[in-house]
Every structure is written in C-alpha cells, then in structure tokens.
Image (cartoon, rainbow, N blue to C red; front, side):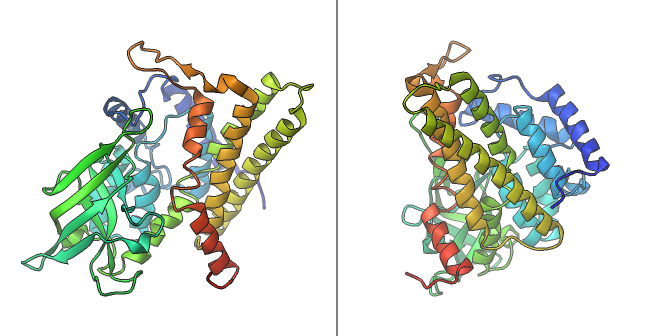
Length: 395
C-alpha cells in the first residue's frame, strides 16, 4: 500500500487545515450537544461548515459536497480532529443515513433529504432498537400497516435509545410490514418526521442529567409511500447498508483514535512514574493502545483502497467495529491509569452556571464504555465474524 498522498490531496489537506484553524470554535465554547442549547450551537456549526462546503466533502456538489473521494474525506477527518472540531450533531444523517440513501434512495428522495441534512437544517435520529429488540434487530415488533386509501402506511410501536432523538427533526427506522414473514423478511425502512401527529418523544436522562437519547412512541402515525427507503419488504437489506456504515468506514474514522492516542502519549510523557510498581504494565498498555490506533488507521486506508476500486464492505465491518470500540476503551483506560485518583475530579462549568463535568479523559472513558454495545454489541459482532467470515456453524 502506498501511504503517500499525491500533490492534489496534499493541497486539499492544506486548504482544509487553514479553514479549520480559522473557524473551529475554541474549546469550551459550545455547550454539550445533549442539551437543547448545545444542540442548537452544534447545529449552527454544521451550517458554518456547509456554507463553505466542508460539512460533507465527499458528496456530489449538487447536495452540498465537493465531489472528492473517500481519501479526501479521511484527510478532512484527520484535520478535523487535529483542529479539535466539535462532535458532529448531524452524524446519524451524514455518516449513517446518507450512504444508505446514495445506494437505495430515488433521485427525488436524494434531492429532498440530502441538502438540509448537510446544512444541519434537519437532524436525524435512529429508530432501530426496541425494548425487546436491541442488537437483535430482526426481532422488532413495531409495525406498519397500509392505510385505508392504499397510498401510505400507519406506524405503531416503540423505539428506544434513539440517539439525538430528544431534539431531532426526522427519524429513520425499520417497521414490520408483513407480520407473517420470517424474522429477517417483511421489514420496511421508513423516514418519519418527528413532528407528525401520533409521534411522542420522551427524552432519556443520562447519569449527568443530559438527554442524549430518547424513547419514541408511534401511535397511528401516517406516512406516505415516498417516505419508504428502498422497497416494501426489503428493509433488512437497506438496514444492513446502514449497519455497514455504522460498523465500517463512516461512523468512526481513524482520526478519532489517532488523535486520542497522540494525547495519551503526551500524558504518559508528563505523568509516567518510571520507578512505580506498575510502571512497566502501564507502559505496555500505552504502547499497545497507540499501536492499535495506528493499526486501525492502516486498516481503514486499506479498506478505503478496496472501496475506491469498486469493492463493498461486507460482514468484515463487524471485525472493524469490534476493533475500534475496544481500541477506544483501551486508550481511555490507559489514560485513567496514568491519572490515578485525579481522573475522578470534575471540571467546573466555565460559565459558572451549570454543574461540574467530567474532564476530557473521564468523559471519553465513560463514552467508550458504550462502544462495545452500540452499533450492535460486540458479542453479536463476534457471532457474525464466526458464521459469515470463518464459516463456523451456528451455536
């Protein structure tokens, strides 16, 4: 693999770096995006990027992108994390739904949904998990039945752990349209406005009191035929396209982990006790976390090379998801070992109005704990690897 970039891509990097250095908000400027205030502040940041065509660089220009390739997107991600860019409030739409739309949507659907998604005007939440169907997506019970006039559908059911659900304008999710079909059949992928009559949103408060998730109830919600992505009954195929993005390239670029691993090395240089009883073990943990972050970066570029040559990301995305989630946790665990009891200290709210919050390493660790669970638990992903990649029999 050639890891050098041609002049045109280096020029793209230089342009992106200059723009980000001039526009990225200073640390602590934006409130948490899991609050109403922070959500709108992050939305405004998405609009700032969109205005200069930086929000979705790899998309076609007609939808707000720059018509560049997957490698330019990876370069932009590296520069984004290098500059300390805020978390993307639009990630469910831009990184998960959009790739699915490019594969399955009609031209009219792309024209309708992609530009406001790129601009941050319409933020999407994901309506997959249900109280009795988390990682077992095929076990969903929410249903869709034809309406009386035959030109639309009526949705009933409940979704939970909907990321961004407390404040989002739209939800994408799958509903059972043929209750008599086998588990993976008879599902359909719908696009649902959150302000539709019959939609009830109940925010889920986290331990810190913020509402990063919501449970959403659908009671007689009317949707039109053109709010189906793909075909009726083919929701599992469409959903697997989204899952491939969630577990594969789109959701977690290697820049996220390379940046954190670099900060870990700096922390080790500043805090390591070379004579302490645990010094050798901590050094090994730091080295392993850094090596794994670099390995994930190289693997991602290898995968991107395959995609650029026309290949798709299949069940090997499950390997990817296991690796990035466990690497994230290893990086932050090593940081907390270095910080010791100091890791538990909270940082005061700089405004003096809110409550104290976990510092960057503790906050990252708490979020990393969820990595082996969301996007399909790692236990399920290991089953996928065993059955679909290694050809092992089902247990």
